[in-house]
Length: 88
Figure 1 (cartoon, rainbow, N blue to C red):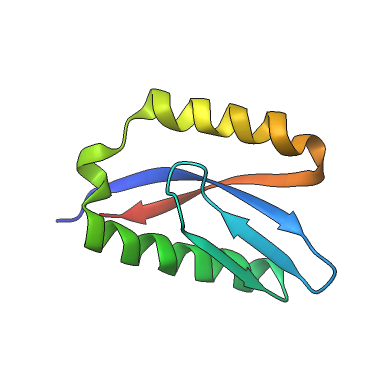
Figure 2: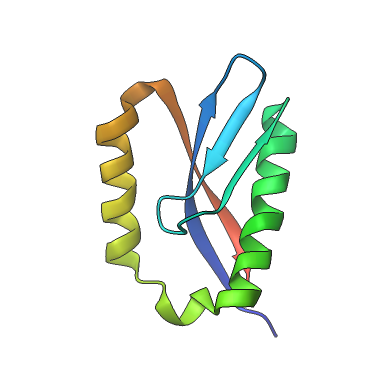
């Protein structure tokens, strides 16, 4: 049985749609025209990343919270903040 985890995600509005990334998963970035499609693609990208890198073993809640706080310091209220449940 796969274990679920919550991974913080930051979504930014752009001129052509949305850009999403996770402050705790370096290099995992997606873009799309709608928020819904962007979040779906981000979930797929995170699942793929977890399979390849075994992120579950490296993921630490305090690190995730610090990364999210740092993202808020960088983007403030110009971003939408979310957590996506990922089966790993």
